[in-house]
Structures are given as structure tokens and as C-alpha cells.
Amino acid sequence: MEFLQQKYLIESLIFSSPQPITIKELRLITELTENDLTKALRELKEEYAKRKGGLLIAEIAEGYQMVTNPEFSPWIKRLRKNSQSTRLSQPALETLAIVAYKQPTTRIEIDQIRGVNSEGAVKSLVDKRLIKIIGKKEAPGRPFLYGTTKDFLQYFGLKNLSDLPPLNDIFKDDAA
Image (cartoon, rainbow, N blue to C red; front, top):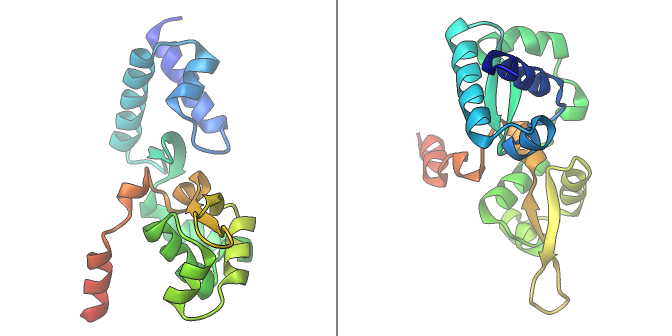
């Protein structure tokens, strides 16, 4: 298969995948080398970005996904009308932020930071697959430790956790 066809194959796989697809998954499906995949992905990302169209190829959650151009988000929001199923409550957002920045963490630690019981918010975030149990703490009662998931990265459009804004930047905005 010539390189152009390989590139179009990769493009169709990214388009067809309901979640970000990793290079490892692409290698298994296509049997192409990592170098060929990397080159094709780089070219695809550049072509989509240069075109400045409605779609882009983004690196999200350690994989690649076709996403809409953020420039058109006001119209996309109108189309979606911010469906209730994707909205997070204020307690859930607070809880998710604590887990994202402090992981691994327990529900008791989350409760102490928030100053209220977070059981409902934790359950909601686990149900939405934004956080998961990643182990047990070596402490009395062996409480569950929670961490974020790939779905969390995908939900917020992050490549990895290092893309989270530094906490001091967040507090700087609050002080202004």
C-alpha cells in the first residue's frame, strides 16, 4: 500500500473510532510501522490545521481523535443545547478538580478539602467514568484511592495530565 493510501486509512480509522485511538492500536489494526504511522499522523494533523476547516485531528488521552474546530464552538453548543447528561454539577466539578490535582486520593481526603460529604459527587463521577478506583490506601480501613480516567482527558480535551493548568494560575485568576 502506498503512503497516501496509508494516510487515508489512518484518517478513516480516526474518524470511525468513538474514542481517541492510540498508535499502538493503529499498529495492531494496520500492521504499519510506528515511523510510518507517526509520519502519516503528523501530515494529517498539519493538513487539517492548514485547511482551517470545521474538523481537526487532535492528540487526546494519549491517542488521536477527530474533533471540531474550537472556532465554531458557539454554533456547536447551539446544536447540542448542552445536553444535561454531559453537564457536571458544581460539587462534581469541585470533586473532579481535587481528584485531578491530588490523585491518588481518598473520598475522606476529598471531603476534608471540600468541607462536605462528597459521596454523591464521587459516585456520579465514577458512573460517568471520569474517575475510577485505582487502588486502596495503606491506612486503617483501607479506603479506595481515586484517580482520573482516559474519559476525563477526553472530556476536557487534554493530551495528558500535564496539560492541566498549574494551580497557581487558577488561584491568580480568582485574586484578580
